[in-house]
Length: 289
Picture 1 (cartoon, rainbow, N blue to C red):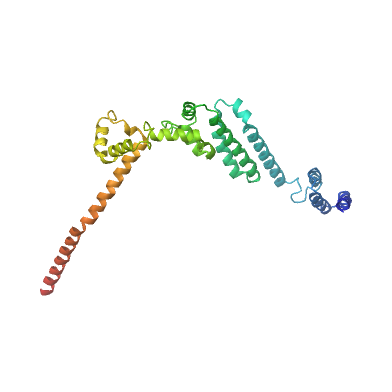
Picture 2: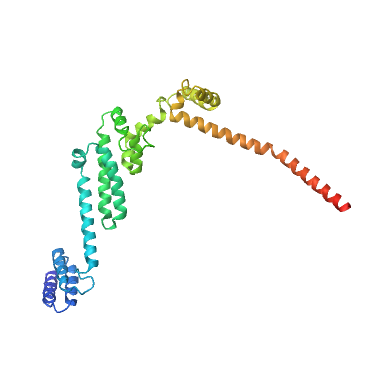
């Protein structure tokens, strides 16, 4: 049944193609070819529209020419990104494969938003680049290699140049979730967060002494640290210690503010009563006059 139907489509298609008196049979032939599902046949019938240059969107007008050029450029751009997104190209043709992958991920994300016709293809390329960056981190043998890999400053902005791991910022900008969630990168960030307090959370007594120094004695330590320019108090270099001290200062500020608001109400009410009494006295004096 399907073979008979296909033969009927072909006979109908041939009759339409031989009838070249107007553009309408060619349009019907195009629809028939689309129903058959033969791409070469569709391309051939589209080329026949050049015989009717006066027809709107016949393939010979300026609009079709611009559309064809745009489609061609879009395909060329996709093929170019497909070539430079391959793992062999990133490994062999780039002096810094990780930086190339991070920058390429940003470009592919922009193309994914702009090129709606090839959005799925660009999304697949971006996932491949993210997997390539993840494989680079997984090739490291120890944490020293990971620290060296993340501390390269090439490609970082001037504001991020002083950071310990500038490549982390680049990965955040490129939305490389799989790269950032890898065990090696997370361990490196944990080490940077703790500083020299690598045993934090393992000894209750040692943690209590650290909390005591940076929460209770924070005003004294901060004063010594400020006047000595960081010469005597080294723990303020650790992000975790700075976080504890700043949190303690903020909580202290809130407590002082609440105390001022609570205990200052009596004075405010007394001043309000004094103002009311003086206003009533002035009103009575004016009325008596």
